[in-house]
Image (tube, rainbow, N blue to C red):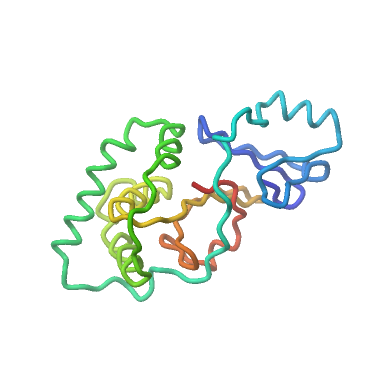
Length: 205
């Protein structure tokens, strides 16, 4: 991902980010943001030695969705089905016991990429309610402050409901900060759109 004059890399094996300051002056991205281009032979050779040129299309992420302009988290969560909602969250935590703990970043990414296709259409109202339930009750789960954990857990739960969403990874530079979120069309499910304006997408699952 290019951020101004900088190139940001995400290692899908370790989950580590690397900031190559100033490289944006000699490297460009294709219009679909999937291909690095440069006219400087030495830079191309260096990027090739770093393993940035994939030999198979399986490493290419999904197209970046349009930036969300609405949040699913408003109005705040309220509802009479507290027992059902808690049971739903408990189901998510049990899923995470098998699909997060002890898993490498590579395994987490691979599972997200290979998840089943959506099986049904969930209208925006129901999808937003799921997001609000999760936001309200996830404070009782471990690692509730970790965006990676929260996004994978909600992704598992929504997948079980047949919903299709995008898991987006983004970065900002100076100061460097990485973040991820879930979105469905114009709605961001785990954040606020005004906060996400500071991030440039680097990967979509």
